[in-house]
Amino acid sequence: MPAGKGLSDRFAYDPRPKALIPLTQDDLLSIAESVSDYLVIDSSLVKDKKIIEAFFLKYASAISGEMLQFPNRLTIPTTFSYSCRTEVISGENSLEELPRLLLGKKVQKPLILTDKGITAAGLLSILMDTVEGLDIEVYDKIPQDSSLQVVNELSRIYREKNRDGLIAFGGGSVLDTGKGVYLNVSLHTDNLSEWEGSNRIPRLDTPFIAIPTTSGTGSEVTKASVITNEQLGKKVLFISTNLQPDAAILDSRLTTTLPAHITSTTAMDALSHAVEAFTCLGKNPLSDQMAWAAIELIRDNLVPAIESPENLTYRQNLAYASNFAGQAFSNSMVGMVHTIGHSVGAVCHVPHGSCMAILLPHVLEYNFNKIESLLIELLAALVGKDTAAQTPTEKRACLTIETIRNLNSMLKTKTAGRHPERFSDIVSRNGENLVKKDDFTRIAETAMGDASIAYNPEELYIDDVLGVLEKSY
Image 1 (cartoon, one colour):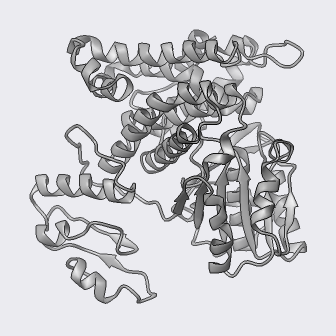
Image 2 (cartoon, rainbow, N blue to C red; image 1 turned 45 degrees about the horizontal axis):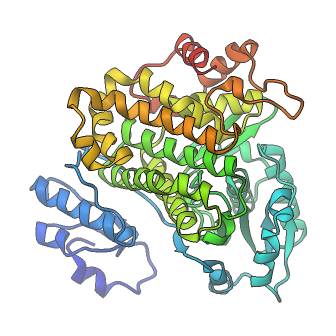
């Protein structure tokens, strides 16, 4: 469907998939919102780069509810794609929109996936109040690191209980588990591992709503799911735009009960998503803007949320940050922070956000020679434009890394020592180190098989991983 918005309006109610291809700069500039299934911008048709740049600035602002305005000149790669098919409903009491979403999808017998922590915190009862009258089945035993075995078992329960829709209600593990079940029940398979990898998953037809109760993973909008293969002892990735849920609800009430150290480590997970999205090889103008906004929101709201945990404004802004960072890395991918972090989590069963917080400054130092110019830019997002402008240009990249390191130190103080700065800070309830130096070789070997390694700006080998682990300990 070539041309601009006028033609798209004519076909607005046509149920068939639609692709909009602007032929002129006027056609492109007439588009101010998502108006088709696919938008194809070909620079051989719209040749003025400034017009294309202006479009991306306007479009990113529109799809974020006018929240985004990237302050620097955009870098537009020769070819890239950006996708977020998930409808996002946000704000205080937005959970009340759940019945409308279920009705729209004709869901009357949903399976709710969650964990024991959510139930104990009283959050599940809030959700159940909104769906009173429906035939509800609840599974609340999803572990911290969900596995292929758990996903396959839940898929069996879904079929045996004759469910007609999925609600994933929890943190990253719950949401990623939900994506696995979403895939299995839609494709009538009992073996999730058959679909491991990138862009192998066809369109899925099971109604699926994601409701995060932490502000970190952004999994409610991402096209990635990370699930542990217990037999292989590693985390495996499933990547496809078709894994993105139909809808996501960001309700600020759902994160007010989070302990301070969970608030801090999940927010650092979001920060790692945003920083890697901005500095890794798959970056594009829309992911850059999402990443930038996420960093600013974390800068302004993380510490205040820890100090005033029931403040709904801080909580909602962190939810936005997580969501934007999720959209950013889902479309640009991540690099070495996640390459190593996934492997530490799989081998040592360390919470993902803790790994991200510890590794982020060390990985930025490792990649420094390839990303110095980007780190110079990022300082303004981390400390504000005025402070960045007063810093000599040659010192800005190092100050960016130091700012992240100082944030970790501050968070450790604010959480009475529970936010980790180093892997040696992470101990079990018995006081034993979860990560031991004896684990380093296995972690490094596992990291070499992680898909995110391909997007890291610097080449990465086992000895390099070992070096970063040593510095992080």
